[in-house]
Length: 173
Image 1 (tube, rainbow, N blue to C red):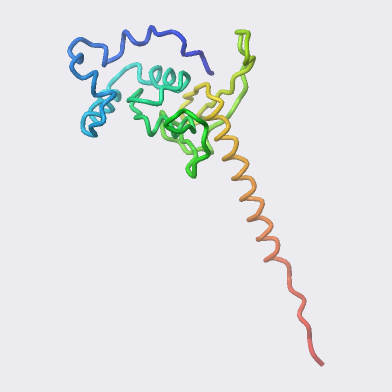
Image 2 (cartoon, one colour):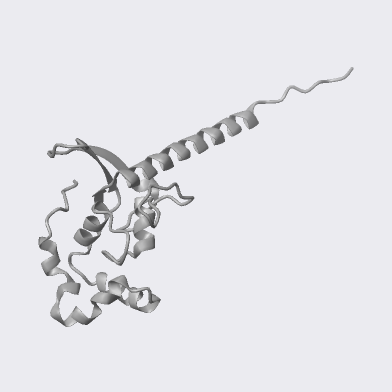
C-alpha cells in the first residue's frame, strides 16, 4: 500500500547522514564514475534506501544518486528526459527497488486530500517486492507497456489461428 513520502524523518537514519560519511556527500552528485559507484554501494547498506528512493521518484529528483539509483536509472523509471520532460523510451521502466520487469508493475489511482490542480495521483506498485511510488509519467509508461504487450499477444494469436486453418487444396482431374 502506498504511503506518501512527504515526511523527511527517514533522513536521520540514512547512512549518508552519518558524520563519518560527511566527506562522501559530494560523491552522490559527482560526474566521476568511481565516486558515483561508491555512493551507490553506500546506499545498499542503508536502512532507509526504500524511503530515499520513493522520495526521489515522487519529487522528481533526476540528478544524483538516490536510494542506490543514479540519474540515468531514475530518469528511466520516471520516463523523463534530462530536462524532466516526459519521453517514450524503447525500454520500459523496471521496478527501481528490485528490478522486476514492467509486467510486474501495476498502476492504481489514489485520491489526494489536497486541493488544487490534481485531485488524484497515479501510483505504480511492484507485485514482486511491494515497492510503490506516485508518478504520472511512470504510470503512463507502464500503461503503454501493457497496451503494447496486449497488442503484440493479440497479433501472435491471430498469426497462430491463421496457421492452424487447414488449407483447401485444389485437386486437378
